[in-house]
Image (tube, rainbow, N blue to C red; front, side, top):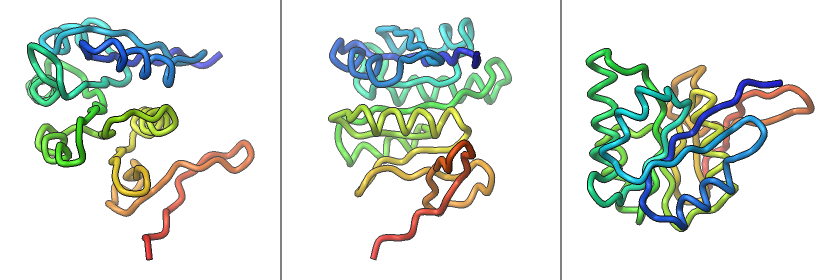
Length: 166
């Protein structure tokens, strides 16, 4: 039986919690929710989740501030690095996700398939950048900025390069 992976979700919107929980929870992934951005650092330190999903709009401390706080704690050596997936409100918010050094982002409305693919990419050590025509990941193996996608070939899984759009 595979190890149980923990996803920490920070949102005060019930509909987002429902969608993330439905998309990500399965036999090897559990989703735990907190309702305030101010709790993110402490809960991350206590639970040591495998992935943190942050809603950009959280009432008292938004996703950008929570993401930056996580990175500050990691930089000070008080937290182990954890990948962060940011849930953005509009495509122009990509600037905020980049500025806060999120490892990945998805623009709302949420799609369960994109959300699941993004979470899997980040859990595998890659990145996910939502954009035109879907998302792309950066390979954790090469570190290059080309578009890569995790692919399954029978029982073997590997990274394949996505051809650029024409």
